[in-house]
Image (cartoon, rainbow, N blue to C red; front, side):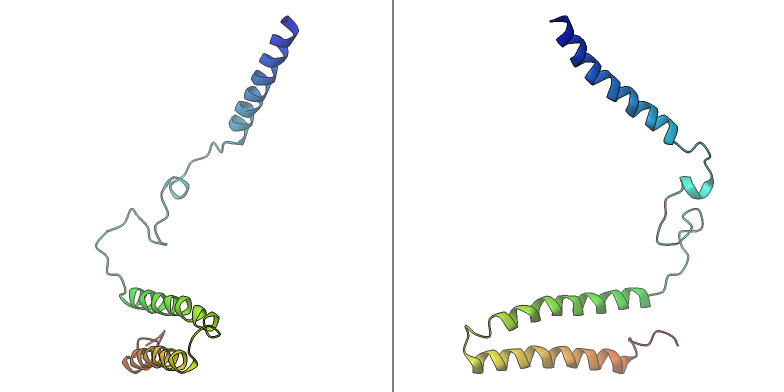
Length: 117
């Protein structure tokens, strides 16, 4: 009985000691400003919070989201081709693609797709 108790307690205590020693040995003791500050999109969080931010970033992000959702909507169109009426499938697919191409043409015409001015 004593042997069982000792083996169980050792099997719990030894891994705990090993984990504590590994934690203490793996810590980096040198702290500086860059390592202790949060990383916020490449901007220095200690500077002014009111600095101007380019709206082109948000425009590109919205365009990306639109065309990302478009891919999610186009993929099932190919899957349902065999089970649906071919005329309705073709007309709805073409309407969807024409609307997307019209939006792409509008963005291109407005100059939203130019990376550098």
